[in-house]
Image 1 (tube, helix red, strand yellow):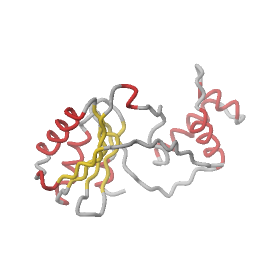
Image 2: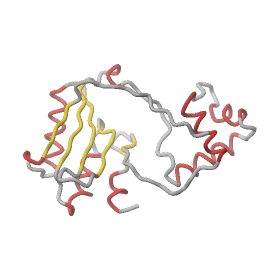
Image 3: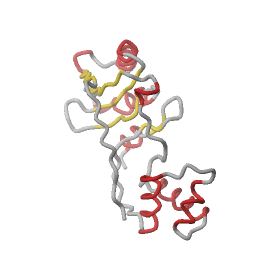
Length: 179
């Protein structure tokens, strides 16, 4: 993993994970895949969810938790958490932002972007617009204010910014068949 990738993956100021694409060569075994499939398709909404998963696979809760920890350490998983319809919790404005950032400032700019609560993805592309991030806010005015703050702190020229607001949101409910 390059230094840039490490800087583009982190947490924002509220502790939420900000993710970046980071391919790995570590392939989960069949048991890992079964655990991931259960958690992806039907996370058990019970008091001890990992114990419930363990019972389905004739494992102990500790074995399931250890496997999940190893998957996280190897970069196979980055987060296990809820998928929230942000429009239903008051975040109705969304955009994809692309910036032209000099190579020597990418880490600094990524760190600035990652400080904002509404950022869910922050990634590097091989393109003249090389730093991209997604952002959600309560309304368009707040979204504009945050973009202006980020670009001012990052010293990005306004002509080097693409703001691509969400017009229609399509939730595709991606599911991976692992087993």
